[in-house]
Image 1 (cartoon, rainbow, N blue to C red):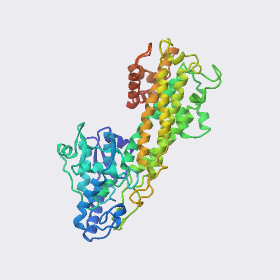
Image 2: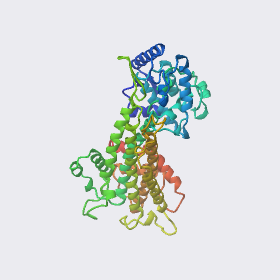
Image 3: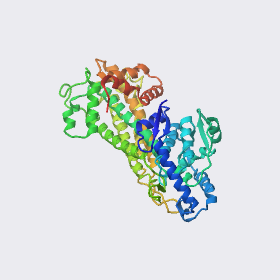
Image 4: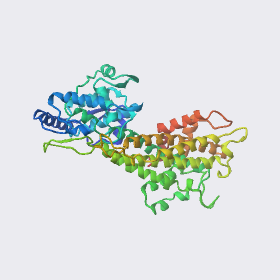
Length: 509
């Protein structure tokens, strides 16, 4: 059986994707279970001794100075969940909801949280049996953790709220019953352990960074097709040029272009047709490469956070200490996710500029206006470029950073927050827009190649062209275009075009 062992320390982005998209099961390591048990025993001892410890024998936030008796601990934990379930908006995608549970399990497996092993096992069963809580996408400030959305996750554990099960939306109690999972009654520290963390922003962002890395490769493929369609000059991609500057992403992008274009009869050398290409062709490695470097940085930060203890207080069993800190604060993710949105927006910005060069007869080196042979009666790709321009303009609005904002909460006890979950959601939205733009460039480049006359594509571009033309025919006369755009976007999303090209030319970076 395909499974991933969670130990709180070694979860990778690739393994995360295997679980949330590939159906892999999860299992806790033996070492993790020992640590969880030790932390729980210490919590039970503190409760028995009526020691004053935040979140265990006190209220939360501004109520941290209110001492709670041992008889009231169960009411305290339940009330924490139901009062904090204030999320609003559309539900997060099921894969994000599943990812939130996976990341919460992994954080709790570190043994700093004091949850009971039985409660943790309930989450494991929900992941493995496909009970995905309905979690509204809005309502988190990204500090004190993703309190509101995580509370919606826990509601289902209690037999409250709603969940998806077998593709159907239903009450949480029914989903748990159908899956054969017992609901839980939380006790001391458990509610706080479950909702005090950054797992919502990290799950959304982890999915986005994975897809952004794939889109970065797709953008190199789309650019290569456009370079051929415009008889672009390949000298600008010579490794000597890029090694002279030294940025790895730039070096990788130039290498990708040369591999994809190898053997092409449609590219040119400098001086054959013209001395230089415009920036949107010539500077593709510099622009795409800067995004690649950003994505590598963001991925490294996401993987740290995927294996982090992010709740409060933290329990250190060896020292028998409980320390109130601020690991729930989302700032270490908020800045990277703002950066992610900006980096992906730039892939769309240059893609739209290349599309404009394809459709504009003043810029396209002899192609007919809007890539139609019968202009006037036909509009061809005219409004495809309009749509792309609309998307990149929207991205510019969305790319405004969320992390520069903060609104105090909990009567000013929580007086600086990260807005990291908004940053992650914005990055996801920018990513979806950018997929569409690059899909449109792929369509336009293939159309331009057909019109110019396909005199022999490169090793990689030939494969990409076949993938597109296998689903979308050349445009002879005007037809309804949104269906073609949707198909092209589906091709981009599936990763098939990257897989086909890599199968021919080797791994792209």
